[in-house]
Length: 567
Ligand SMILES: [Zn+2]
Ligand SMILES: [Zn+2]
Image (cartoon, rainbow, N blue to C red; front, side, top):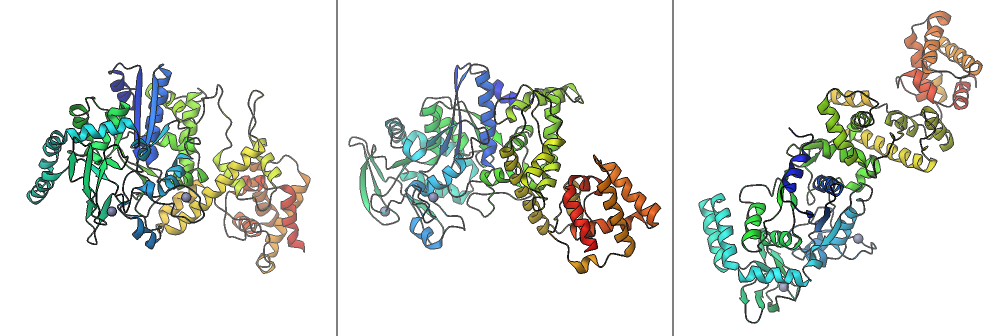
């Protein structure tokens, strides 16, 4: 057993004895790109760090496949716009949003993803596939494919035929008779494929390759235009099953993860490896298979409705937590990202951090080794020498919910004074604190939203047990205050007196005082007193545990609130 599942791939790569390696990932920018893509990107980013530490030069690429044709659009794209642009490569489609100012559909969604990498600690290089196809090196790969069409067909046949039923076998064989491995962007209508009303897709495939002239002929299925174009025109794109190995060979890809759609038998990865070896004379990458990342219990899809982008994630949670989720889970297991479980994720992270810095005892040697290996790979920046200061999420969530009654300075002071800071440690700045506060607020609002959608009471209760969610109204209406009994009011006023007399209170003494007021001074069940507090503070019947809650509130504000009783 290795220390961490990543080691298996590390060892496989190491067997190749290279001084330079290439890690490769890819994505088609067909709409908002959901956070699932970061699974393969973060796995590769971790591999990058591991090999760089070994002194090996690592190239790490993300291919944005903007030369791919728009087969369909997500539902949030305007219908007329969809009709006009179906079948064009994403890079030749304008940005779908008015006044956005970006260059194309592909750039809009591609850049939305890329812009988050720095915050996730990902260091990679972007290759826009359309640009790549304008280059001489890629034109050479196109020429090799055209010159080897028959050989490619044999390979595809060998892998694909056994996976088809009789009807589709015949279809495949018929199609192969005239098949040429390139498609062309029509010079008239800019489309590279046509989608007919019945939903079937017809690529604008070359119908003839003129080897001597180094041109291809085509008849556009979308507009009927017949054209002939040079194989160096930049209008040609290799069929997907050849495009992938051509890029592997060009960049000498050492390892590329494959989502389960590409891992199937007879799939593009299998045929790709053989084409890479037989046609392009390169052994091909090591396949790292991985399962999908789901949002709760739902699959996400770029062209489907359910989209949760990395950008959205960053608005409400910590990127290091996300890296941890990816790296702690074996890639063959699916991950369910549950925003409402962020506080559990934090608990896990904190435990890992404590064990890494040796301030907590690990349960076993395996656990220690696993965390020691993984922790630096979850960091966005370099691993600090001493354990970083962290404002607990619980405290942040409390503070974020009291923003309407406390000033930023007061919230900040409460946060800082709750941390036991040693001299050597860098204090969290008020600017950083503001960002944390905002992020926590967004997270809590997201959980509140989530709670309105959950119908199962048990699940709801489980979530609420983990996070205190409350709202402190600016004022409590007079008629609500009037529902308090005389004893309850008296108890509250006694508490105010206690509050004014004492300094440096702690949660326990507050909790105890409320008990004594109820039992000894008023002779009522403590429950009645608690209810009175919740009503006056939250306008509600219940709320978070009172002692710590009252302690966190500002004394001045609290006295003012209690004064409302005597108005
Ligand atoms: Zn745009
Ligand atoms: Zn056309």
